[in-house]
Length: 194
Ligand SMILES: [Zn+2]
Image (cartoon, rainbow, N blue to C red; front, side):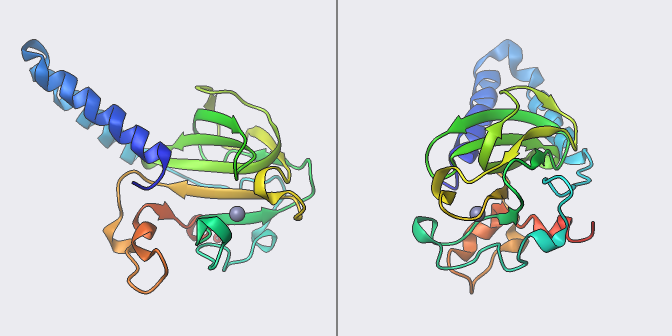
């Protein structure tokens, strides 16, 4: 599939449905997860640039889907450059799904925001949040760094948004891995009008 987070999301959702359908007495509640999903889509997003005091000049508008991009093949996010230690702030309201240290992302945070979109913050110098913590838009979740495969490069926040629900309109028949654009959204779309 697309990402581990997408896989886990579908596993949890389908398990919930399977549980409800299998239990005769529960079957009348099948609409509960559907309403839950619908409400998530109705929440307003109102995204802000997730690095303190950063402007659109802190990233290149061609950052998203840059190719070739090492083992990732295409760059599925944007790199927002800032001094090491600058606060990384949450771009939306949401909840922390996990924090992780290791791999390509180095110190990273995954958050679930409105509209069932997962927001990924990577290469952090420091993580300043914890799993399941509800987060208000604009609050600090870490600091800009150069961890993971950003080591030796100028410090930056790798910021990416994925959706477990595909957006068929975003299918790109020309770009490398263009079909994946249905699941990996370009943060630039929302951040450019700040
Ligand atoms: Zn990046």
